[in-house]
Image (cartoon, rainbow, N blue to C red; front, side, top):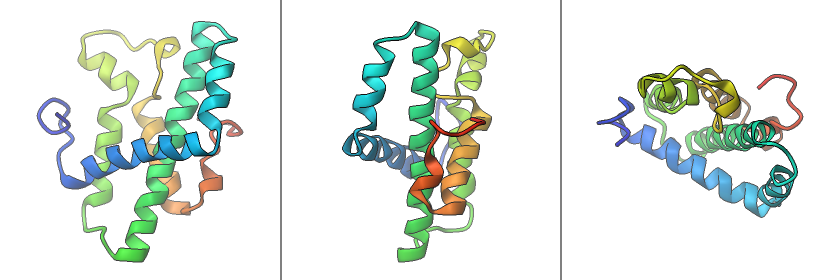
Length: 142
């Protein structure tokens, strides 16, 4: 689906998506998902969507941390891999998905972040290699 429907082919594009999902597991283990779910139940839809965006961008950043660690420990990052991950992040941004569906992007409805945000947070994690750099809830700019 990544390749055929979204134009985000390559083995590392798929690895990024899996690492993003593992990032959600890390968030769950840290208690972040429970806290954000409670908070989302107390706010309106637009505010809940903004919380969801922060959760998703944090998972993108954690995927970037994983990519850096995989490269350092196992030498498993090949030329072009990071570009594949960045392309996948761009293709699954809310703005891009809404545009591709023939709709005008509606920021209040975003739940995962824009293409630019997703790429920037993957890159943040990959460049820093630090989980602490992934705190999207304290970030002034998403």
